[in-house]
Image (cartoon, rainbow, N blue to C red; front, side, top):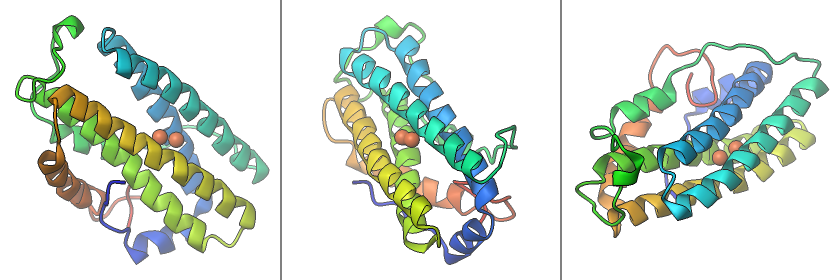
Length: 205
Ligand SMILES: [Fe+2]
Ligand SMILES: [Fe+2]
């Protein structure tokens, strides 16, 4: 389990005060999570552990997407566009360099050579870890028992996804990635707490 900084009480208050916006943004998050998994399938076609894991992950994230759509429907809300808080983009900005030009040039177990890949996996691990932390928090505070169960279910899945991305980072590095993860955890805490952001799953409080 990746320990991220706890969400602020102001975010919890804002989130519970506008569950419609939160659910709308959450739907986009699940859709993006599936899209990222598919992007990695194309980017690293010969990384066998990643290929199988990302195929499964993409399907699971789309099931999450459909579950959020049902929650929206249950509330009479239509899914549609929503301005992004660019949380993930800010995390990826802190990643070292760029991934290999040729997917086939990836040599697993080379920490120095794979620094961009390690960071990319760890950034994804942190997105999942933050979702886990916020779903757990929401499950404690939302007044609606149905929604609390929903968040509890998803929290378990997102914790598992966070661990999966850390395992992939370790495979790319050929060893532990704890020191780099700690640096990115600190960066993520600053990104998630950016002031003057609209309420989003990963921003606004
Ligand atoms: Fe998900
Ligand atoms: Fe996930």
